[in-house]
Image 1 (cartoon, rainbow, N blue to C red):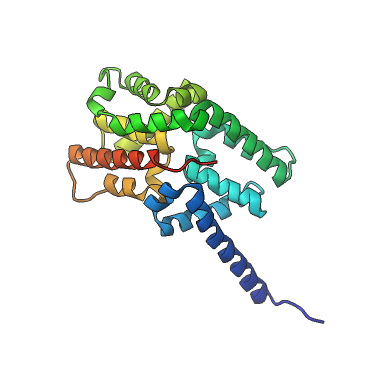
Image 2 (cartoon, rainbow, N blue to C red):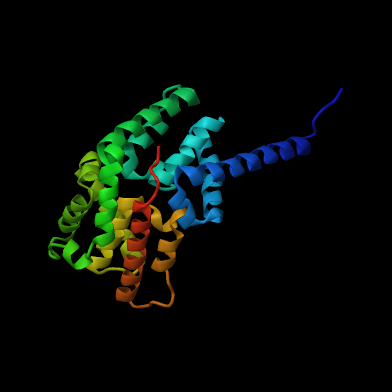
Length: 255
């Protein structure tokens, strides 16, 4: 009787995973061409591997649902499943109802369509307008009041992408601000403009942008060891973020 040894099974599985990864690289180049170009193939492959692993935590093992999960990572950040701004996705992914992966993916797709209609708008008009505004922001003008920094930054975020702000809701945006405030202080970026910039990037790209392989250029600017002065680090990060936003404005439309 012919049997498959464990090492043979492992090798077969690895070949299958490698083939899927290669296919996903090509697919994502079509799905989000500018973002993939900015991030680079090595980072895209890292995101694919992470997505293949993390999607399994939610019961996704088939090609279609796993691919959809990875697409969402490119749309909302690699850790979208724990981002408070993506509460609609988290609720579906963490729903304990006994759903098979196809039904769970269908619900997730329905949630995405609702989000896209409200936040991105027809032909992504709202999203592209928000990216343009973010690319042109002047941090000194972004903060209307330094004595009430939190409300001032929230007002600024609303001005950047009002449709997203209203959809997500002020309590969640305040939660996001708290996370950004803590992050900025850990990074010794404690000035009002630095905190505002960290908040703007998180609101636009995802709350864990600083650890996301898709946004290595931003984390590199953030952690640039040659700039010990916080003002210099802020300006380096600001200019890098502005360029990043401008490049995304030109991104081909995602489905």
